[in-house]
Amino acid sequence: MANDTIVNLAAEAGKIMLQNGGETYRVEQTIGMICQAYNIKDTQSFVSPTAIITSTTSDDGKNSTIIKRITARSIDLNKVAMINDLSRKVQNNPLSFDEFKKALHEISKYPSYSPLLKMIFAGLTTASFTFLFGGRIFDFIAAFFTGMIINRVCALLARFRVNDFFINIIGGTIAGLIGLSASSLSPVFHEDVIIIGSIMLLVPGLIITNAIRDTIAGDLISGLSRGLEAIVIAGAIAIGAAFSFKLWMYIV
Image 1 (cartoon, rainbow, N blue to C red):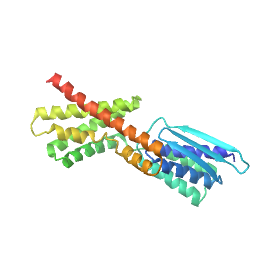
Image 2: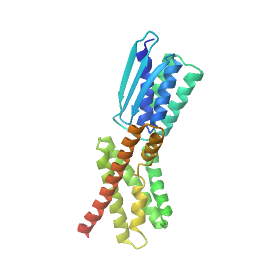
Image 3: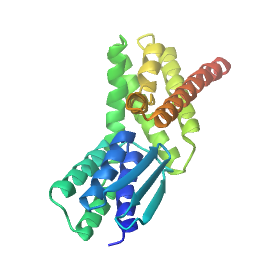
Image 4: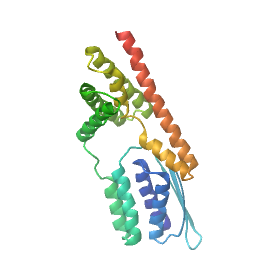
């Protein structure tokens, strides 16, 4: 079997992991394990948040290089875990090439949680943060609906391939406007708690964590790029929240 066929599937496995929140070192490790399981000893991988470059050398000295571009990213740690388990399975109990290819395809098409479930838990996430920041039951309720609205709007914008920077601006704006509107209706609502709790849904926690882990692991390019991405996202959220306050001043 040609090396480039195996390397292509190994890189595809790495791509699935990277697209769904996997760390750089874990992607490189997974690619190496898959190639080794199919008797490709000399494997070198370079992984960044936007690309995977994998090169191998066969026993006869033939080189094979595969490049995978990462154009879309989300968070689905279940797929990361499934690829992780598959790479260890093929190393301990080698699958046939066709079986491995089929398993990889099933993981890539594995269904995520339903939109309704995502919306409900987005609301529970934002609502729970209001208690953490000293909010009361009315703030919990307001943040719950705010989180659901932000989740649905962001999902709709992502479907139309709107840039993530503008999605986060819109999310921050929604959080600010709903928090200000609720507090103007009744003093039982506290706009600061509602807004802070709601924008926590947009905060790039996984990206920050991966940036720190990549930097510590020595993947400086990946760590710095993820760190910069987190700063840009945080800036977009702040712009959206500030815009909502400015817009509210003109409305009232």
